[in-house]
Length: 185
Image (cartoon, rainbow, N blue to C red; front, side, top):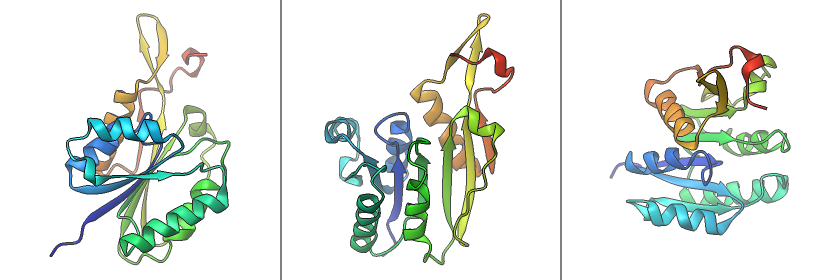
């Protein structure tokens, strides 16, 4: 019997919903970290494989609650995830490191797709990851059209992240970051 693929997606009921749905189609059991059960339920109702989408209701700003929920799923699943897709707001600076601490014992290679806002591109923070982690970074830019700009849609973001996963791209920008002065305000 082959091992079930297992993923965590943080931000999955919002702009990464398309990524969750695609991962389910690819055979993953996807644990979606979210705060609003009704958003998860709506997402699950749209899925072709709703039994492969799993709710992980927790506010990732609450470090202890997040740690407990992640540990519970790892124990329940019998191991660490094969993939983590993370969109975490800067208001929760400990959330990603908390999750990574819980999965650091995994020996087999796994991937982290770290989705970050456009301004993070200019900071280039150093994200410390466990040894077996293949780190991928995705920056969310904006779209220039008809002399003005707009932020990316959820579909554009999801499609860009899926492209990074499929092609195993180490670092990518979805949309553009140039010229920076043209970004939406």
